[in-house]
Length: 146
Image (cartoon, rainbow, N blue to C red; front, side, top):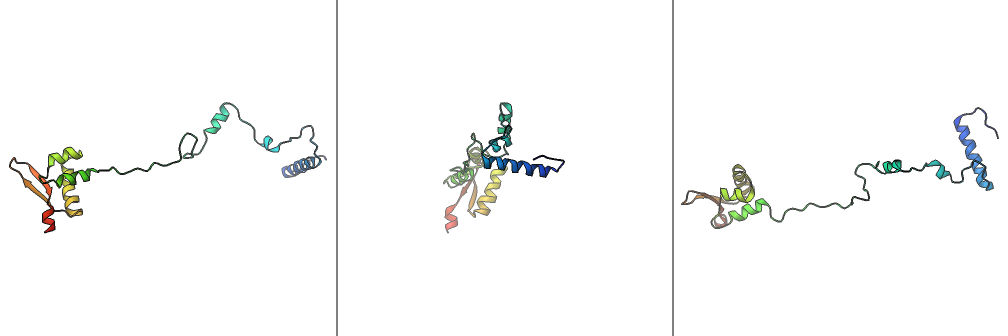
């Protein structure tokens, strides 16, 4: 069967028909490919193969990374918990003590006391000046119960 000037689709049809007839008869011609999938994929060697392995989409799991996600846990005792614990002591706590425990600045501690302790939590926060001139803050649970 000879190919004359035809379109590309006619040539592809011809090649499919010819390979189907070779498979049916079991005969392979001199230039016939016995494994059509091998002819379709060229093999890569050396740098090309290594390079191809690196062209994975971002975020795709590789053999080096694990697929499991680590869930972030909340610390067992937060800074707010520590401040509330100090304020519940019978002596209470000074501003300087709360700054040392939390690492916050003075205005942040005062903001926490007024905004969170008094307003959000609704606790009875008392402020007293001791004999040594230091102001002590404490949560007065007896006044809230009465």
